[in-house]
Length: 343
Ligand SMILES: *Cc1c(COP(=O)(O)O)cnc(C)c1O
Image (cartoon, rainbow, N blue to C red; front, side):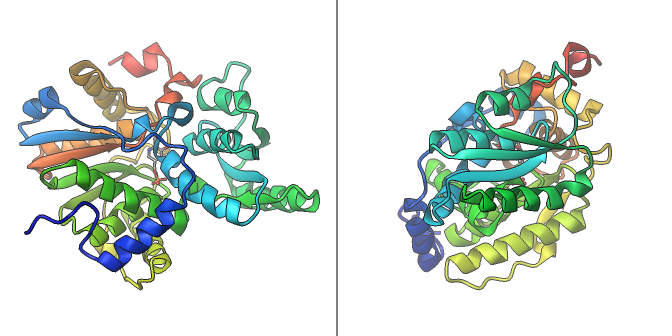
């Protein structure tokens, strides 16, 4: 393959449409984020190379992958004349915390619909949501979420607050474009394309963006999403559909099939946010071999998947772990020195 100019892409028309949209994004993330080598762990796993893309360092209020999506979503909100952001998630939602920070940084109000019941001692993301000044509506049952979110939106609209509704996890086609752009960023940082990118995948926008970016920028390696809470079939459909819709925003009409999307759901059987020895081990291995912190819900599970898949030689060669952040959840009330470090 010939060496191409950074970002010129395998599909120049889509790359240039993406660059135009990216140029309008709100600048709230510190990018490019670093790519680092995990030499000790890589050697231990006997892989050619183990790299990490540090999207836990996007910067805004402890960062994470939602900050990149919010850069694109804020531009959409601004174009709609929004004065307020509304979104929903779990009590320890990283997306909600980053949305609250993004809103604060733009002088917007923020309302969050959170599922669960916090105790007086709840910390982590919930503490930061409050510190960042978000208005919080609690629901006890996740099945009420869509309804309560819609009601919150209508009420805010009636009050003239000009709300803008952000999807769960920031995973709309526009949010996904941020990760197509991020894949372009990664490729300009590397001399060789990795054989395999591994990431935590949940609402699907991050993986959809990477898959789309692969087509735009000519990345032919694997993109393996470790499912956090859904069957492979569900997540593959979600990712493919988001990638297809996102391609339309670039003037393309690409059709990714669910089977083309690589998802592994072997590690989510315990359920969302439930800590098992998989996450405990991964958190300890990454911390103790590399001084790198992964979180109990997302990146700990994905890192556990990466360790297992590479030990079983299901992934090999040059590996890149896409760190999506989430460490704030380490300071949630449910996790402590016993649950995190006991074996
Ligand atoms: C939201 C989140 C993910 C999953 O990203 P999606 O785009 O929702 O699939 C992974 N890691 C962390 C830390 C997250 O907060």
